[in-house]
Length: 207
Image (cartoon, rainbow, N blue to C red; front, side):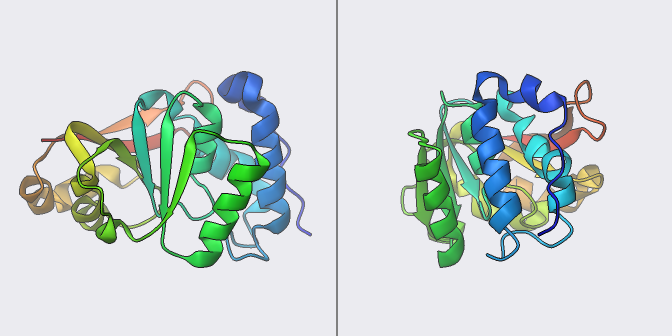
């Protein structure tokens, strides 16, 4: 088994008194993620810095009831649910084996603030009912807007984890942003005081 990255010092700051749950999740994902098709073989040695903390550091941006589209291994949804037990999280994932993993982890971590829904975002049946939607490494903004904005209530937010080209993605999605009434799209950098590589989100309001 590939060795799992040693827990960075910043982890205790980010997770506080819930660090034990983050450690439990990191250990499970590092041990079983590759064999279950959740992460690639290069990921365990950078699991904390590239994946868990990259996800967790944006936790302060959320409130209410939040959807995570394409939750996969639980990045960012499960990590955010650990960091923010006061927020309700709906993990939306179409693939059965990933849904099984998410449900197992919710039980193992005793997370009472998480609902796992097996569905594609396009098949969401509950209308624009969420306070925010997040996603990580799913697809380009121009593709994400049509499948995420319809899930969000009027005045809610899209808070999408993105890479260095986030600004270019906003420019390329101009037509979709306008069509789905998504306003004030901008890039915010989060965690620069804690992480060597801070996280970037595209944040926008749905009207």
